[in-house]
Each structure stands twice: as structure tokens, then as C-alpha cells.
Image (cartoon, rainbow, N blue to C red; front, side):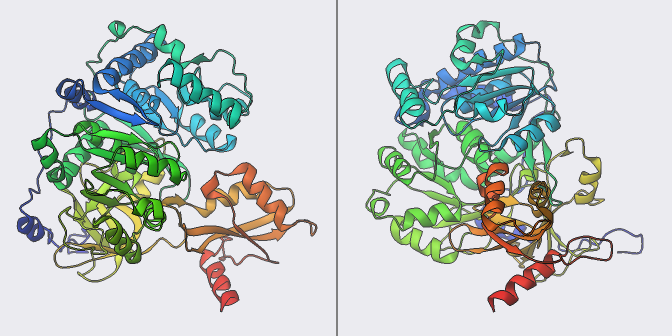
Length: 575
């Protein structure tokens, strides 16, 4: 600290020399405070009108139709008596109804709660209860998940089928296959629910009342995250946060779209990452609409055959993905044979992109992966590499425009360039705080407004940041943050488990997978029982993959589990 007791900040925007070299503008101009995402979206609807907005499984929808349908959704929600500040949860994969619903919630002046459709009943109940959601709009495949809560947490439920916006004949066929052939829709019965189609039929776009009291400082989205402490909580993202990140992304990515504008051809954004994830929500969803792109929606990115078919029929210009997806495609013979000539930008996020993956991707597509970095709490993009790089750098780039990055020690002081510390972010995209969690907000924010990410990194003298480590307890599974505390709390509910500790262990395909150390209350407890309980109570990427029984967990003097010691135990057993 300095003589006045202030935290030390001395690496004064060293990245500005990189901005100058690239010819980029560092400071962004924000619109007036009475602006919102509603204004941004409406400008796009007017500007791009009859152009295609989204494609899903061969069905298309125009900007004009998104405008119309989203006003109908907004009118319906307003007709329910929902008002500014009320929360609406949306639980769908990447289908046409998802962006329409999301935009409808925002246009109604309400707060969107993004929900992972793969949540278990336990996880869904927590998020709906914590967010105080008044309504839930979800795809029928997961309606039973809500029904199994056993009580009506929300006042209103709207249920849609996968093919509901794909036209009469095709929609009927898709819904029939999903329901009766693939049997992906368990039986459900939710009293008082309404179908998506009926909602649109009974709602006229003319009844939509554009809210005049929504501005940049209002909360647009509650984005749930484990945060840095492991407790599931909602990051409050304001209209300012998201509008700022759009402008910031445009500074780095906008040039890549200019050649398409000159030719009049619409660029396609491959939207394989789920839109409920903040990376895809902002970069693929909102930014795609902002730039007048075609969003190529892929409901299940693990279905490589469907993804490759979509890629072949609508070659993308922009492909945001995580390392595991880049790897799977670069090693797929059918994908290798495709025409990649229109691909201009490949952006890696969510997890570190490995150099072997980047090299293979360039070999296959001729495209260099540009790595970025962000979190739910930063809307999400905090740093990025320029899109016109000559080679893969392995860094996460430089701070976004109007963004400060500080590498801090445990006391909150900035370390010297080249030294390790906690990556901390200050900028207009940093969240307002955690919903109903002032204590958790205080834990991650410094006195001078930096958000401490929990990731450890190094900054060089040109402002480029490299991640060298992360908070030891966090497990990164296929780009998703998984926190031991949440898993431990669930698994401790098993009657034969006294206590347990969870760590991440290396797995070549998904980065890491959870391993649990179990102290048994009953010696009859088997590994299969532990795995089955995990399967029934945790979302897929959070589920236990390895089990080890031990007599006692290592702990601190006050009883906290020493995950570091568990990792050392794992290392010794593999030595």
C-alpha cells in the first residue's frame, strides 16, 4: 500500500501501446442512460428487416419475424401483470423459440433468468427459488424436471415443443419424432400451464406496450454462476453491462464482418454453444443480432453429425467454441472435407485453447483461433486477441476497450509485470453484484472497483495476459465452472456418506472431471451407488466420474476440507 493506505496500482495501461499498434480505439462511447438493450434490438429489427436472423435444423426465421414474435411474447408477459423487476426464467436448448423468448422478456422490461435445461430438479428448484422467478418458459423435454419439484414455485408456466416454430408440417414431424420415436419427452402434467403456440395465438403484437422506464442501470439478466466461492448465485448484469460489452466486442470483431457488408452477403455465426451460457448469449446471440448476422442454432453440440450438416449447409464466418469442440471437429474426417473458405474468425473461450488443438484447427480450416477470456460476472468478455493475428499466441489477449486488468497479490496490491497474481477486471461490463448476496459481492470486489476473478495469470509489457493457473478448488469441465462445495453438499445427502471432498482430475477430452473422496457411514456403500446418486442429483457435467473411499478427510483446524491435500493424495497415488 502507499502512504495513504491505498492499494497499489502501477502498471498504468501498458496495453495502450498494443491498441496504438493495432489502430484500435481504447475508449468507448456509451449511449445515454435512458438507453437499453431494447433500443439496440429495435434498431437491428429496422435495419435488417427481411434478412434471416436464425436458422435451426433447416428452418429459418427473419428479423421481421423475430420482431413480431418477441412483441407477442412481451405482450403476453405484460398481460399477466408482470412489471419491471419481475424475473422470467427461460429453460431451452438452442431452438428458434429461445432467442424470441429471451428478446420478448427483455422487451417487456423484465429481467431474464437463463436456466440450463439439463439441470436436475434440485438445481432448478434452487435457481427458481433464489431468483424469485414469476414465470418459467421451457421446452417440453424438461417439463417433468419442473413438475418433480412437487410444488408451484412460479406463477406461470409456458411449454414449447422443439418444432413449434418450424412450420405446420415440419414442426409436426419434428415434434412427433422427438416425442414418439426418440422418446425424449417424459410424461408430465403441469396444472395451469399454456403452450407456446397458444401464447402466441392469444397475444397480439399490437397490445405490446414498450416500457419507457428501462435504462442502462436496470438489471437485464440474472446469470447464475458458482462465482469464486462455490455457492450458486446470480450475477446481476445490467443493460449497461451488456450494451458496453457489445460495443467492446465490436471494436475487436467488427472489422471481420466488413467484407460481408461490402458484398451484401450475411455472415453466419455458428451457435453451437448453448445460449443460456453467457459466452454464447452475448457473443453469438445479442452481438449476432447487433451485426445483422445469421445465427446458426445447433440444439445439441455433442451431436457432431447434425453440427457438421449445419456447417455444410450454412458455412459460418464466425465460430465461437471451446477447446473440446474445436478438437472433436478437427479430428473428424467429414468435417475436414468441408469447405472452410468463408470462415474468418474462430474464437476460443470458456476454457483454455490448447496449442495442439489450435495447430490442428489451422491445418484443417486455415483459420487461427483467437482466444478470449471472460466470466459471467463480466458479461462476459474481459480480454481478447485481435482477429487478424498471424499465429496462435496462447494468451487470452489484452483488456477490452475501456477495461482495466490488474494482476493482484493476496493483499490486493498489483504485482510487477511478468509476475503471477489474480486476474482482476474493472470496466463497464463488470456486474452490478450478486443477487441478494452483498456479502459475496464484497468478497470479490476491491475498494477501487476491480472484480477478482479467482484466476491466476501473468501480464507482459504489451498488456497481453496469460492464464497460468486458477483457483485450486475450481474444476473446469468442458468450459463450465464446477465447484466442489456444490457437489459435496449434494453428495453428502446420501445416507451412507458421512462426509466427502471433491477435486478435479485431468481428463484429456473435457479438461477435468470431478473425483470424490468418500468417508462411508456404512461399509456396504459401493462405487456404483455413489455414481448412481450423482447421476440422479447433478447435471451431466457436474457428475462424479471417479470415486475413492478413505477413512478420514484432511482438514484445517477449524474443520475446512483441505482440497490441496486431496490433490496431493491423488498425485501420490498416481506416482
